[in-house]
Image (cartoon, rainbow, N blue to C red):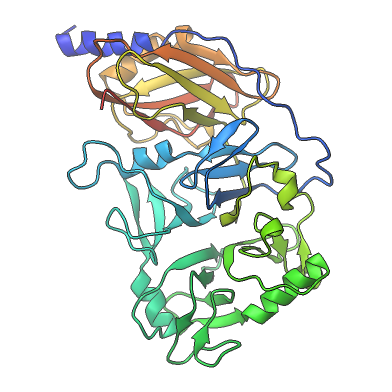
Length: 408
């Protein structure tokens, strides 16, 4: 074993220390009726739910009948995006502005995002698609500009959904002047309007004017409202109605609405049912067909000598997981439920972590949650660690991968 392998083994062993399982908050009381659909959202500001911090760059999952938890943390998108420009650390998106999860292939291949701002070489009007090599542009901002005849040559996508037949439902972040489309105001596409487009087959059209979206929300709440902006879009897999979130009114900017019955709040997905610690609104929304136990970290950039925690949330109660580590992501080594595959690279560090798998087994509590604590050694080398956990018993469900950048 050479010096590098010895150092790698030392680093892995430092991650092998056990900690007592954390006692997390129980289910929210009074959560009735219970939603029948699984959804993911992104918030506009940092908040907490169930004792867990939720950042605006995270994606929060709410499985039907369960507490919400962060299922796609910034450390997962950073692992996929990699280093950008001259930075020595992995790039973390500033804010997720729209999301759609088709949920059929190995995650994150069917995860689509749009960002609040231009960053990492992407524009705020681009729709990105995830993959094993990171994110790439699926629909470019210029495509939306052309499809809608936007006069100023700029567009910021604020919400979108993709139907199985390829049709795209979307909304802009601000009012846009158009050469041929108009809603309540001629030749103006309002940011509260919902548009429909079959990409590259003709032009987009306005499906619902902002005043019609106002009517849906007004009917749902029993009073006249102005939604201000459509923030998220999806489709109810049960009734096939369109689901959406809006900017106003404030007490319902984290509620999920449906076009069903002329407008209604989706049962079990009203703002109060999320039990956020502080007021926030939803920036993005998608229904999902599968979920996974979420792996997170207390610090993505730990320095030598500090304490660090890995967390699992949304897992099966009283389930054991192997925590494995590698120096990079790679092609799936084995298929798993949840994330869809063990996607750590089969490198020297992974081989050592596999040898130590039994020593690094963590067990969830009755709520499907667990903590693994460790201390970064004072003499540890600067290294990027890619971490993923897999249940040790069938059906071998895997978590999302994350990157932890030690000593950087």
